[in-house]
Length: 227
Image (cartoon, rainbow, N blue to C red):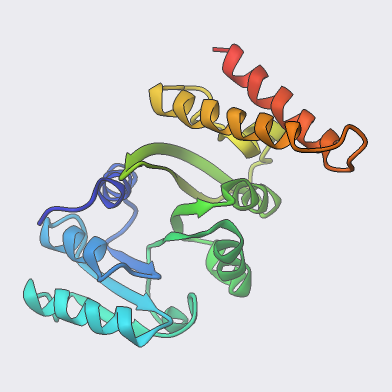
């Protein structure tokens, strides 16, 4: 079973930081990720959850194709609501915006305790990181991957009793990614730098947003130059 580069990078992090044998995949993508993990013997059981019947029906087809009906269970419902009464070890929430991911996590904060999370936000990942820090969630590791011209960042995290310290650069650039910068990291932030500079040239000098954009430009340039 072959996954996309994005899903394979997520799967690789789950394999590396596996905790327990049961995964809940929230907002599942045709149940590809849970089916792969079960089929490869990485985990014993998974729940493929989605709010819409279309993705659930697609998931059922994938599950049946790989004959995993007893191990991968499709559940229809919003966010983590379908797994309220389930025994879960790990929870993946991938392919959404950062704000929506935060809303899902915030709706059932009881899940933040005792579970390991694998999170991938398509946009607004800084919103997600800030929320994690506010909830004293430790970012264990991060990965960055390019798939079909898009660059994605993936976070592995869990609740900790230790104090979590962070600064603005950790929120934007990722505490783990900025420690081990690679070509994709620089590609993403050079691209973002060009976007911010273009925005700045389109603003009047006294525009309220200009200070914010200038600050972001300085932040990115500082991180890139830090090596």
